[in-house]
Image (cartoon, rainbow, N blue to C red):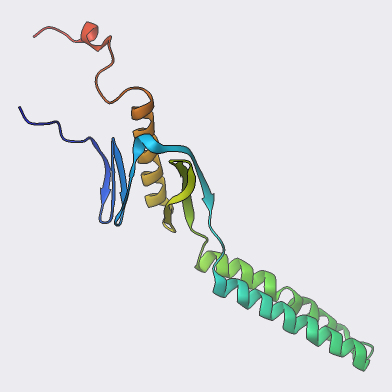
Length: 159
């Protein structure tokens, strides 16, 4: 009699979720030791954050220089509208940056008493599949395995 093969819940290159193990790359966790699963979004892209910050600083600097030089009194209505539009540039950069390089989705959990980042991906579909597979594996551990429920024999027709 051969030993039962583990129940495979998700498998893609570099990511494997079975009923008893969760493997990402070269790191493997025992599903029974993972608790307190939760998801979050990671940090924003550093390049986008720096672009927004630099733009905001430059715009604020131009505003301060114009204020001290007395240039604000001589501006026309069109110039004020243009300055108002330029002030919105950091918001536009932030929106484009989040669209271009969105923050990654992260799956966190406690493993043997330590909170660890289990999985991170910027692909929402892949993240959803992996996190559902890990949650299903946790439910299998919590409810005693993947065998048929005790009453299943009562409902099977005789052949």
